[in-house]
Structure formats: structure tokens, C-alpha cells
Length: 555
Image 1 (tube, helix red, strand yellow):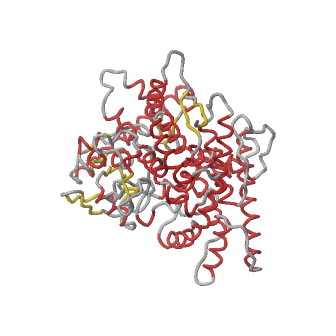
Image 2 (tube, helix red, strand yellow):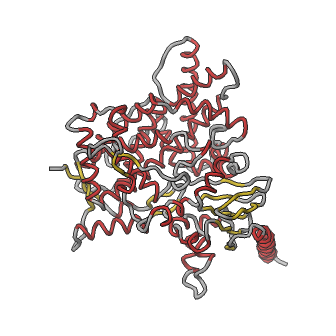
Image 3 (cartoon, rainbow, N blue to C red):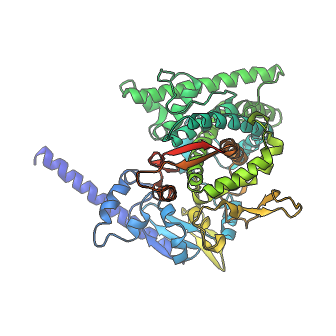
């Protein structure tokens, strides 16, 4: 037998063995799923299969063309299927069902009471840390630990996200939004929305996280000079390539024979690490000398950890670095993508822009942006907050997962009580619970921020409004329970400040294509949002540049 024949036989044998093993695992998991007593959907390839995640859309687009191509395989076996499916599966199968894959079973849950039970029972339904281990690029952090370590980190981190930091977020966001608007207003059309909102978010994080302020530069204004050793550029390179870094690791990226692009990513990691080390050492000396410094997340984390060490265990240096990275990772693209979605929705809904303007004029009047006050103005901007709520309702950027780990767990879902086997993934169905007509009415799929607003019960002023109170568990974009997002208010303040800065004196419209009315242009934008949104690392619009915008000052 020739070498080529031997290789072919080996490849065929390995493939056959892998397929056989996968089907055995699939059958075993199917037997386990049957014990739960809920509807089942069988998916032949695991959700987390790395190769499949790369090719899923291409293969399924071909598969759908076959006579038998429309089934569970093409409906569920691709990243981001939940956004297209929304609440349909739960409408068909009820509040809970199981997807069976060769690797694990995935239990999907769309019941507010049951979801709150899962969130409260943190030890019964922990996070599947194997999914989040890749975030340990610079050290262990709140996303990658459990038990006592998690409690200790959470206690210290909670003190850093405070009102003093929120004031910094507010003022920096207002200032940067003003600069970003000046750039957009100077252009005949804006195609760089997604890129510019990422720059905006990065600069807010730079100031609130490290005390570094940078003037906003639009996509066409950025310098082409090599500044890869600067802190700001290093952080940008790290965040832009975080998936690559997580997948390959910094040790591999340090190899000198790698392409220049990968070596640049490694150098950015080293530069960012060195910057964190410098801030850490400076703050330690300042703390020892009992001197005060600028308040930001990094210095607050160092100080809180040292103060905690006087009474109990504190964070290690690596844990501080790990958490600073996660703050940036979690707060960068989430805000940028949400802002992109919101601005696109507003461009397609001029009446909502007018509705926003009425509130902004009432609250902010003719004051200049540097006179806007976080403590008095932010709490009154309910309509701006409603735009955020409605946007993340439809496009939640970071869903979370739970699992049963080593033990079976009992859970009441509606009138039924089920037993969930060990090692079962438990997935809050964000896209379903956030759009189910049972909780959101017949227009649940429509973007309508006014659904969040009600008149104040204690004031006769027409602009004294309140955000409606919802049943716990029907709106969970920042998760719930002890493991809810510690940066929730940080993100809300940043978004509201940005919207206020952008829409206080300006409005935005889509650029009309040849032969198109403004109304049809707006309909095209809504269609693009719907058809062009997908899960990459986070949920985002893939090609917002296909709907260029124009900004005009209000008359």
C-alpha cells in the first residue's frame, strides 16, 4: 500500500470512528433528555464544535436548497439562531424544551419565575466555567471563578463601580458624544457608524478605567502613524483581537516566526500588561504614602484590594489585571454595538427622535453640554433610558449560560416540576422571553421605546415620567441574581449620556438611494437591522455601512 493510500485509509477510518462516536454520544444524551419529560429537538452537531462554528452558515445555506433541507438541523444548528427564531420555538413547545447534541444537552427556558429561581440558586446552577476560561488572558477574574474566590472578588469589585465613577462616565461620554457629532455633522454621509461608536466606547473606558482621556477621532481622521506601543492603541488592538488571543494564547503568539500581524497582537498584549503593572505599582506607593489619586476603575480596584487585605484576603496582582481586562472586554463592544443598533433604529423612526428631543429640551434646556449634571439630569432622562431598554430587549449583546454541573437539579416550570440531569446546559432564552407576546403584547417584535414609559403617579407635570415596573425575569439583559453584571449602571449612564449628546440639537436620517423616498429608505434600514444582525463574538450588525446616514442640525 502506497503512502497516499495509507493516509486516505487513515483519514477515512478516523472520520468513520468520529462519526460513530458522535452518534453513540447523541443517542446516550437523547436517553438522558427523555427523562426530563419535555419536548426534544435533536441536533446532530454540537453547538461548541470549533470547526462547525467556522463553516456553519456556508454549509447550511447549501443544505437548505435540498428537498429535505428544512428541519431542526438548519433551524437550530448555527450561531445566533435564537435571534431569527425569537419566541417561535417556545410558542410551539412551551416554556421549556431540550436540544440534544453529541456533546451535551441544552435546556432552553422561557418562564420568568423559573428563570429567577435559576438565577437565585447560584450553587445549583453555576456558570459553565469551561466556556469562560478563555477570558483568563491576564489573570483569573469575576467571569472565570466560582465559590469563595468569586465572593471575594465580587465584594471588592462592587465598591469600584460607584457614583464617583459614574460621574466620570457621564462627563466623558457627553464630551465624546459632542466631538463625535461634530465629526458626523461635517460629513455628507456617515458610513463609519460602527467603527466610530467603538472608538467612543474605547475612549470612555480609557478615562473611567485608567484615567486617560483622548480626543475623539473619526474613522477618516485617525492617524496612520505607528502608535502600537501607546496604551490606547494597545488596548484597542487587544480588544479587536480578543478572540484570537483567547483561542491561541499569548505564549503561542510570542513565537518569532509568526506573521507580523500576530506579532503585533502579542506586542499589544505586552504593552497593555506593562501599563497595568505601572499603574498598579504607582497606586501601591500612593496608597502606602496615604496620598489621593484620580478615581478610576484601576486605581479603585487596587485601593479596595489593599484596604480589604487589612481585614481579610485581597485580590492578587494577577486577579486585578484579569478583572481590569474583563471590565474592558465586557464594556467595549457591548456598548458600541448597542449604540449602533439604537442610532439605526432612531434613523428609521423620526417620531421617536422628536419624542426624545422633547424630553431633552425640557430637561437640559439651552445649557451647554459641559453644564449638564449627572446627579440632577441623568435620573430625569427616562426616554433616553427607554431607548436603551428597548434596544437591548430586542438585541441583547451578551446572553449568559448556566448548567447543572455534577448533580441533577429539580426546577418548577409553570405547573410542572422537572428533574434536570447532571452536566446539562441551562439556557435562559433571552431572545424568546424578551419578545414573547405573552409578556410584551402583540407588537412584541416592534422597536417601540414608549412601551417603557408611564406618567408619574406623584406629579402633574407631563414630563415627570417613570420607567414601568416589570415582572422579575421577563427582562434580563444584564442577567439577574448575585451574578448580575456589576457594570450595569456604568453602561446605562454611558448610553444615556451619548444619546443626550447626539440628539439634543441634531437629528439623523438614512441617505436615500436613487428613486427612493425617505419613507422607503427608513423601511430599508429596518430591514437591514433585521436581516444583517448576527452573533459573531457578540450580537451585532454585520454591515451597518450599507445604510449610510446623514446628520442635520434641528431648525
